[in-house]
Image (cartoon, rainbow, N blue to C red):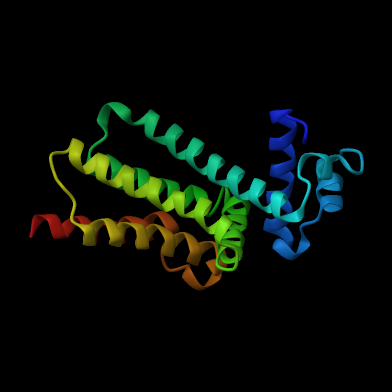
Length: 195
């Protein structure tokens, strides 16, 4: 049975995420994680018996980090959470994701692609979209509006598209900042409610 030291498991998963961000999933190995985490050789394989287990740990951890961060951002604005605040929150999180947390989201994109070939990874990553959808609905309802399926879909596509574009091809998207791009696109989605 693998050791249960949660702090060590998270540190190893964080090292795996850093490797995936730098080298893609093909660079991930137990030995590489041991080296990146500065732990004795064999430590990672004691915690994660197979490469699949290590990939799943990276996926679980990157999703956990994403939601911890999003919930922290929401908590800062909890008293004023309405559509305008949500629009600002989404624009802010996109901008931070592609700057401050760029490596984390580069790893997430790598893992999303890996998930197209591994259903068990795809299921965990799909929860990030489900969680974002729940937040979109919750904020609209708090503001007295039931969003349409189309609006929820467009907001998800906006978030994923801006995130992917600015992580993968930032030099091609210099006309507007990530925050301004997200805000402009969200303005269009929210404007549909006023028509």
